[in-house]
Length: 360
Image (cartoon, rainbow, N blue to C red; front, side, top):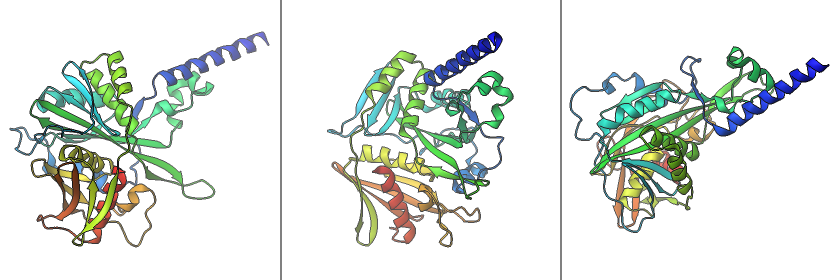
């Protein structure tokens, strides 16, 4: 009995220690790159197979890392300066502003994601975009006695039932670079009452995860842990934001109470979060060039992304332009076809609704 009590005590101590690790570090990602292929919306992975997006070895193109514009006067933006790195916030959106060129930041940011446990499936250096594969946050696993004792020997049998993917977008500004991180998530759900079959379905994006990785990226770029934590704490407030769907001259639009600079950022993050494939962007013209996969009308799509994506891998993506026009402190977001003409189709209505839902 004495030896049994000692074993129980040691097991309890190990369990408590594991819990303390979980509390101190809630992020511990492990790539799912070797896992079976996920049944995800087709356009989420389609770009990586397109060889015309290979990283060029020559000069950066005119549209790459589009030149930013100054914040519109009167727009509330929280700023925290730390050396040449600062975090800015407007509403629930946060991003980093770094006084370095995108070329100087590309390799450190790439190393950051690999050191965080991810593989990169998309690297578009000419556009300033990189995207990770799907990975599991192992810090969410229960730290029970068996796992705490045997560790990696039984680690493969544990699963959180959730996977995350992150997109990083860098835009050149007159003084440096703006860095945006957007999150997309998937969750495994049972499809039968016997709970013997599962499918992967999208789950809503997590702005707090985005903020945490921005904070960690600050550390990678030279900010101390304590300073980065203070910045994250001061950037926590999130005022209410609104987006309204309207119709002007038969064309569906999104109306925002934002000037151009803020509207550009908000729409860009909404496109990243909702899985659009952004092929190019022209900030001076207020245009994002995107690809869109129409949903399958004969199949009910579950979850948030069902409003936008089809589960069929045979659907061909369509090309559209997302146009942002601003006048003072108000902006409109509309859809154009590939040639730049106003789009009034059902697809335009769906795209506008998805963008508006994310901006609310």
